[in-house]
Length: 79
Image (cartoon, rainbow, N blue to C red; front, side):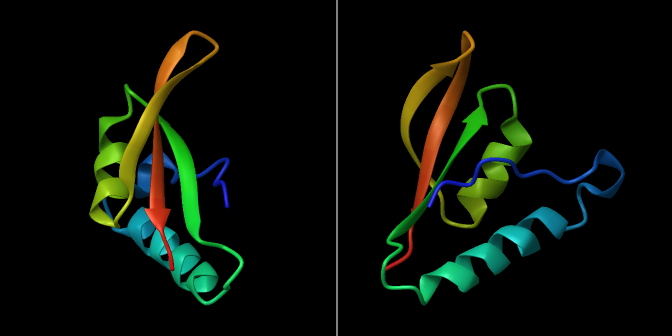
């Protein structure tokens, strides 16, 4: 499953909200046998988001360019 858009308003960042949301998504889909992993793209420039994704178990799975901007493709295995 691909996570298309995910964000926490800047006023609320740094409070663990993003991690809780991601972990909720992981828990929701871990029990579904037809979904083996979650994937997302994160901008090279968004260091904080990349670190959050790594903390909850996502790993870099390649790099790509979207509208000439570099992104990391990241995945988290569920099953």
